[in-house]
Image (cartoon, rainbow, N blue to C red):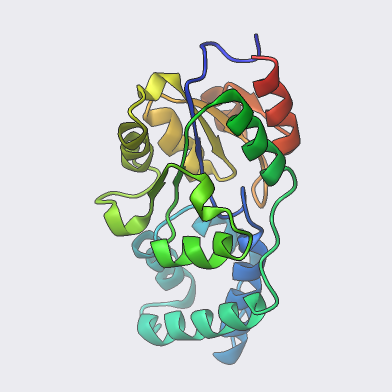
Amino acid sequence: MPFPRQIKAVVFDMDGLLVDTETVVFAALQRAAGEIGREMPFATFQRMVGLQHAHSDLILVEHFGPCLDLEAWAAAVSRHFHAEAAAGIALKSGVVEILDALDAAGLPRAIATSSSLAAVHESLGAHDLVDRFDALITRDIQTRGKPHPEPFLKAAQALGVDPADCLALEDSHNGVRSASAAGMMTVMVPDMLDPTEEMHTLCVRIARDLHEVRGWLERR
């Protein structure tokens, strides 16, 4: 059996797992940094992956200094992001196939993301995928974001499934910490971040991509 318990629901992260937004975000951050004569190192960006804006802002101030105008920075990043995303944000490999497999198995599923509801519709709406999820737990309805377990606990509650019976799929370290703290069987599907020893400890498995996860689900 690929997992320690029977899976009764699946909870997905979005950015970097379902859609290739992290690549677009990093490009937008680099362009915004260039406008103020600075650089956005990949290592700094990696620390921000999976965090809500309030926590990311602390990293930005640490990197750029206390004089950073966070409001102007956010506006610049948003402008560059939308320019980059105008051509569409690509789906990650295996998304449609794993959703089809969940349909066939009759398993409910939710999204637990640090992004806003508007961002979910922008990223997934173009691919007609929003309605394929039974619940959307976005930052708009979260009191505490990842790595706190609240997003995943709310997802389980919305699905009516015990967190211990949920499979959580994440690409970021903070997302894995959040899902694991919620008591879910957690699989990391790495995107911008490689799995560390901590990630191996917190996860039941590390997957190459969603195709591999689908294969495990079909053998459950």
